[in-house]
Length: 270
Ligand SMILES: C[S@@+](CC[C@H](N)C(=O)[O-])C[C@H]1O[C@@H](n2cnc3c(N)ncnc32)[C@H](O)[C@@H]1O
Image 1 (spheres, protein in one colour):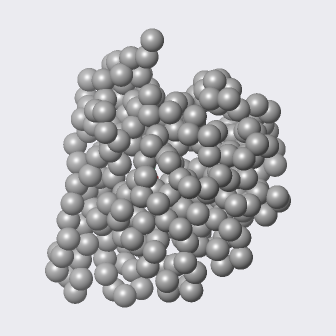
Image 2: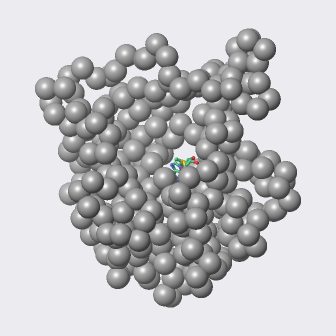
């Protein structure tokens, strides 16, 4: 039996100003080269599931790799498409939630970077794993990262009922504020609304604001629902979805994860 008290439709905050922030500032990171080698080593065609604004996808296409992209957020995909056009590549981009994945191709590799557990609840995530399995060719590989539930000290304290009573957090006075190359200023504020240790569901809110020439031109609030998974739990979920030979790596290295690892990478074969 699974206990859930979350809404049936996936909810993610990657829209409006939040999507613009991703497109503007999230363009690098060790994940790009790490996931790329799975695609290069007999891993084409590949699907970048939850591709967002193309942080991984666009460099892969530029490198001549055969990779499709899929994401729930039309805003993230629109910005991905804009960047692709600027950089002279033309990916197949599909607007789909991962638990509804239904694409015309089968893949040698499916990568999910920073996307698994977002938007929905445990039922959605179990269905997503089954669909990833269906969309792989025999012998194909799913490479998926998962931030461990205890990596974020601010969030982890709300697993305790003594601390949970203070939720929802108040909106912070200031957040991350950055200026883009064209002078546009962006600010993101976030707060934790709900942590349910039974379902392992967390609800967060983000308020994004955007200024041009000192004038506020766009502001919006968005909700992110997510489910946190422990490493052995996700391992069992992958086996239940039909995967075998699940190998674990820590923090985008060749090493096995340790108790210090924040991001466990699951390499699971069909
Ligand atoms: C943290 S971003 C990562 C984007 C990209 N993979 C990267 O590493 O730059 C998470 C992405 O997952 C997408 N997403 C969230 N929930 C989803 C769901 N249930 N199905 C498909 N995509 C989802 C969001 O729209 C967002 O683009």
